[in-house]
Structures are given as C-alpha cells and as structure tokens.
Length: 149
Ligand code: CA2
View 1 (tube, rainbow, N blue to C red):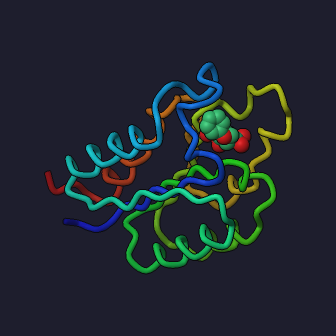
View 2 (cartoon, rainbow, N blue to C red):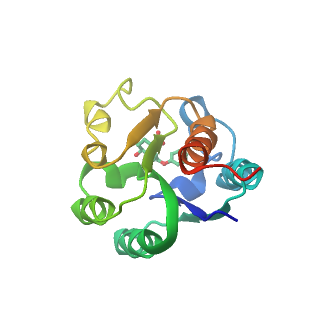
C-alpha cells in the first residue's frame, strides 16, 4: 500500500439516496464508499471513509489525516458555508485536498450554496458530476501521488 486516501463527508450525507434524488441521485453513502474503495484498491491505496454530523469530529479527523494522508477527498456539505474550524484544519494539511459536491453548487436555486469557504484552501473542486465526482477525486489523488497497480 502506498498510503491512505481519506474520504470525509459532512452533515446529512448519511441520508444520501433517501431524499431529493433529482438533485443527489439514488446511490447511498455505502454505494459511494464502495466506488471509492474500488478506485483506491485499483491504485494500491488504503481508504478511510467517514461521515459526521458534528463539526468537531470533522476537525479531529482532518487533524488525524494530516499525519499520514496521501490525500483528502471532502464533501463538507453544509460545513462548506460557515465552518471556519474545518477550513483552518484543512489549511494545516500539506497533502492534496479535493472538495467534492454531488450537485453543481453554482447552479442551485439558493445562491448561498455556491459560496463554499473551503474553496480557498483546497487543491481543487469537483461539483455537479453526481457521486461519480468522488471516484474521480480518489483517482486524481492516486494519479498525482503515484500508482502501484
Ligand atoms: O452537492 C453536495 O454534495 C452538497 O455538498 C450536499 C450538501 C449541501 O448542503 C450542499 O449545498 C451541496 C448536503 C445536502 C443535504 O443533505 C442531503 C442528504 C441526502 C439527500 C438529500 C439531502
């Protein structure tokens, strides 16, 4: 194994697949984890996949990931808009960070959804490609860090 890719999910994403399928699709978070794991396995990386509704827990996970992460994929969900402790924790990481949103946050009915404060500290963003965006983000990290398989 070349290292660990951490996939971190923010509030309410535990309900993925249960509500608003026109926006977020029918896949559950377990399906997303399986997709990410397949990408990580194929490239020779371990995967940590987590979801929390608690901001402090997200901060703790980012701080822990900082020590060994090959990269971080994060869907901050509604933490995107006001969670400065999460932003500060991400700023302390040296590894590549990809921010993922399932929906296109720039195309949503509510303008506030387009104003992610995380954007200023992440390496790049994938938004609007559905849950496939997670797999692309994991693959990107494997590509930039080097593949074993
Ligand atoms: O598009 C995304 O991935 C979002 O990060 C999802 C967040 C939302 O606050 C962002 O604006 C965009 C969370 C959406 C609410 O949670 C749901 C979970 C499952 C199904 C429907 C909504």
